[in-house]
Length: 525
Ligand code: F6P
Image 1 (cartoon, helix red, strand yellow):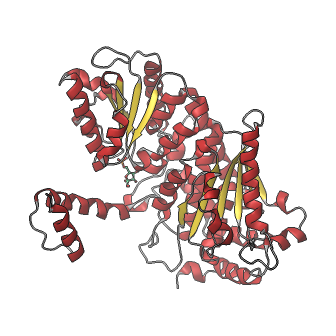
Image 2 (cartoon, rainbow, N blue to C red; image 1 turned 90 degrees about the vertical axis):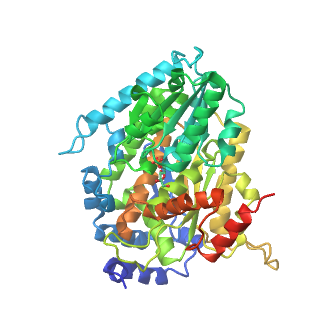
Image 3 (tube, helix red, strand yellow; image 1 turned 120 degrees about the horizontal axis):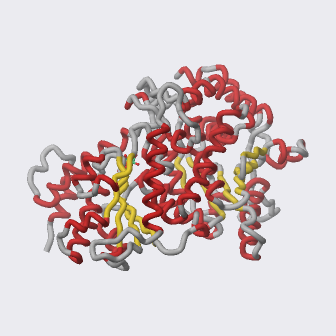
């Protein structure tokens, strides 16, 4: 048994879990008329209603005790203080600096002059693009921008550009390509004109196979149409912590924007990696996004554990994963504009906390990050909600609901009504005497996260909320949430299989299944 599962806070929670096992949500609401108010938290433009969770005041108190036992306040101070808490890579974790407005931050190691310098370069670039001052090789103004990147260099910006649809400036069109499958780039380029197309190659390392392959293909596409001129470099910018890699691809140094080793890829949307967001919605909207995140940072640093939104969300997840055996969590934004949020959260949460050894390298005996999945409502209702309501798995759900974007339209009100209906149906069920196939058992937990409106500010807060939630979970589970070594082996294997697939050759040493699949795939007409 690990220190954590033997600890007083953990064993108290396990005992309390047994005690409230029989209580259901209908009863919990019946005994406490103020439950909805009591189990809700406001932070800026966000409101979290967590009353439809299988917790009582004692459970929340004990969960906060678990966070205190893990010395969460000290860890928060360590992160904001720039200590190298990414221990396997000996790096600080300072994505919070990217949205800071402090003159110097953190104490003892100021990164703000670099951050401000990069923001200024972003501003100039965005301005140039939006004025149509940036011309391609044949002298025409740029009209389409393709972001080439993957994982943290793609998912956040892709999600935000869609989510900020209503704030988009007229003119430039944004596109995203991530897959090494040539079909991804091909499909995007099919509608574009080489002379007016610009590529942003976003890669912290500039060694990622998918991104380098797509960047090379993009260059060949331009060459085929515009010839091999030096003017082609006018079609590229890069965002990277490896400027030499970008320059080797022919990106002019003045268009290589910085990244730093103290920002993890999946936490990098606040850096110049967020350039597509600023290009789509303008630099002031990007700054609003940073402001929203900054507000959540302040809330996270200052609010007591039991009133702290990221902390409470994290503790609820821990409650279900570790004390109810939940293996997944569904995220259902009732907003088409937030359709890409589940995919973004998948990387943020599963790449950060999908770990099986603790910070000291010891194998652990408790579950960590659940599988995160989801899709936008209402289409999700006609796909997987049957299982949520009547299936055999316990799946906590996060409903993300947007309040008034101006006046209610009937359609928008119908959308919100559906979200509320789903969370109520999950919690309180529907007994249908004599027809068990029609009955909904209820007692299925969900959070409702209400955004007053979908704005750059509320989006910034929403993302920062999840970043901090992931951090809190990592602290309690005693994980390093900021590395991702599990991804490396697969990348290396693919590298060794590629020549064998193309040219054949020695397959000794490979497992029998891979050998036979290779042989079959090489047998062409
Ligand atoms: O999948 C592993 C990973 O390293 C992610 O953490 C990262 O976001 C992604 O690849 C892309 O990396 P890069 O920005 O260096 O191309």
